[in-house]
Image 1: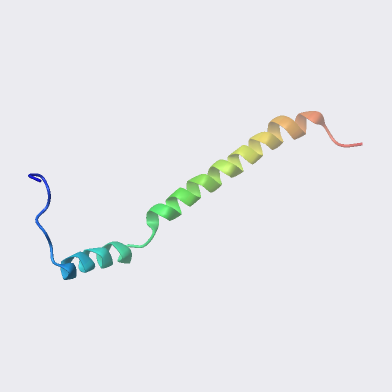
Image 2: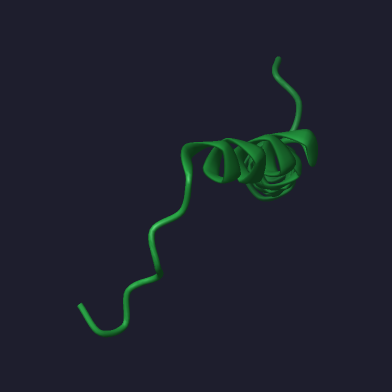
Length: 58
């Protein structure tokens, strides 16, 4: 193809992979933090708007 990158040696590709892996899983950690924050926010909203208006159990 006209727009494809020229072929690289396996050593160069391995080095590129090692550089990416060395940076760590920052994206996965951010995604997990956002998902956790959403779940906690939904729990608080449910608590504030459903449980508290009903009052205490008798």
